[in-house]
Length: 224
Image (cartoon, rainbow, N blue to C red; front, side):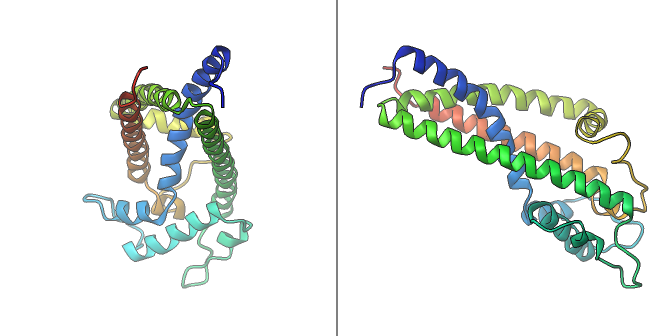
């Protein structure tokens, strides 16, 4: 097939550069939405114990079910029907309402991620069929550079002011103080601030690593 005309190449360049950072960031988020991250995080040195009585095994069980809820098609009764041994509900109404909000956000982000991944794949096939694959990979590399800058800024901000970033994140995606809970509430016992700090660091670090990989791939492509 014929090579892409100049206007199409410029458009492809802008599109790939814009899509790559978001796609890579959401890919790392998806990787963290797995039991592996929970298993590793609860075993990291210095991870705070639950002063209200959850063992590590308890946390692994309940956290895995919370994660399952975010990714499955079940209603909130999936979590609402969970009970402690004494018959008391695991989550209160405020926590359940927040988990509904979180699920809506997660499901929306996963749809965006899938759409971007499919779009990049389609652009890659298009570039291959028009003898522009080398250029496409170089564009991914440039997108990787942009992603790396964003990830580095995120990690730097995390290092100096994680608490403010945490507040800003929740204020952006959730209404009012609906995300604030007592230390004795199950969500805080399962996912203390340390958990979220490490999750943000993991997202930033993995995104930075992925960006470096894309930059390296782009750098290896011939320029002619």
